[in-house]
Every structure is written in structure tokens, then in C-alpha cells.
Image (cartoon, rainbow, N blue to C red; front, side, top):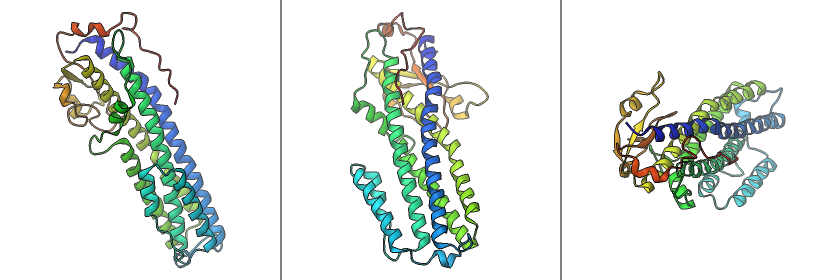
Length: 318
């Protein structure tokens, strides 16, 4: 088994992150709430301009939009494009949006939803980047007591954050999940137009759809935080000269079968691969890694007797 010090220290770090991760989760959910409120206002405006007796037929929804409404959308989209000209993912999506004088009323409302979800995705991606970068730097420092180098440079942190593990990076997952959300919202709009649904009913269905993002957000934050924690830990161990790591699962009634099977197994640090032989192995993964060797005394120079039982202050704000 791995040395008890490293296991205790790693567990203490993960316990702290459980608390800190809540800040990122709340920031992402706050952006969803703002997007939900904005979409509700757009629906109110839509029915006020085009509907009769608070319902609208599909034929009416398919009529051409007023030029002034399209101009307003185009101006806002172009302003957002200019303020984010160095963001390739955002620009690609903005440039792909269809804008024409022949656009229908329903299509304009769908564009408005796409635009608002695009803004939310961009804000959420930036929030993840800021949080995970600080997390990576903190964990490397927390495992770098005594005589060890205590910092990661920006290039090393970016390499950890941008790694596509299990097929995607955190940013790609955010955009992908929000694409699914936008499609669900637009499907509800089409159904409402076909059925002539009252706008209050439509708005509630859309709010419920936004509400369904909470468990997915919590899962995404936990999973990406676990990945970054372990990738930063692996970087620290590698720099220390650790040759192998041991997979440590949290063993309880919630432990997944794959983590239970990997628990206690050792792998070369050079073959560290999240999703295959290192955490995160799956959504909501709680597993960690520790140095795997019976002779850990050569790493004692990295320890400081004053900090063995404690951790550096998590003094970074988000």
C-alpha cells in the first residue's frame, strides 16, 4: 500500500475541493438562471408583438419577421462578435448563425435562444478556466512542501486544462451540453407554435428545461475538478521523480465497479491516462492517486514537518 502520508494529504485536498467546487457550480447555475430570465423576456416580447389573445399559430409564427427586429438582433450579435474577436469557438458559432431578411418570426426567436445560450456557454467556459487553473496551481503547491518547487507555469497549467481526456476537454463538454440544451428549448418553441400554447405555459416549460441543468452542472464540475486535481498531482509526482502511482478509490457503497477494480493497482507515471488508468474514470469520480512504492524515504526531502498534518491555506478566491 502507498504511504499513509500521501493518502491522507490527497484526501484532505479533495475534501477542501468538495467545498470549493460549490463556488464554480453556483457561478455556472447563476449564468443559466440569467439566460432563463432573458429567454422568458424574449418570449413575452415575441407574443406581445405577434400573438393574438396570448396564443400564436404555427402559420403566424412562420411569417416574416419585421425588419426592425432582425436589425436589433444583428446589431447585438455583431457587437458581441467584436468584443470576443479572439475566441475562435464563439466566432465559429456566431458566423454559422443564419441571418437574412426572409427569416421567419419563429426562426428569429430560435436565433435569440441560440445567441443567449452561446453567451452563457462562453461565460461558463471562462469561469471553468479561471477556477480550474487556480485549482491546478493550488494542488501542485499543496503537494510541494519543504524543498520542492511550488509553482506550475502557465504553459503547464494550460496543458492540463486543455487535455482531451475521455474524448473531450471541459470546454468542449460545456459547448456540447449547451448545444443539447438549446435544441431542447427550440423544440419546445416549435411545439408551442404548433399547438398555439399560452406563453405562460411555454415559459414554464422552458424554465423547467433550464432547471434540469443543475444535476448535469454539479456532475460536470465534480468530474472536471477530479481530473484536474489528479493531473496536477501526477505532474507533481513526476517532477519529484516518482516512477509509479497507485490508484486509490473511495471504498463505500457508492464506489463504481471500475474504480473498485482499479483500487490498489499501480501504473507507471509515464503512462498516466485519465479515463483509462487514472481518475477521473467516470462522471462524479472521487478516486485519487498516490506514489506507489514501498520505499518512500527518498521523497522525504519534499516534506516539511510543520505541514505534514495540514495544508496550505486555500487563499484563492473565485
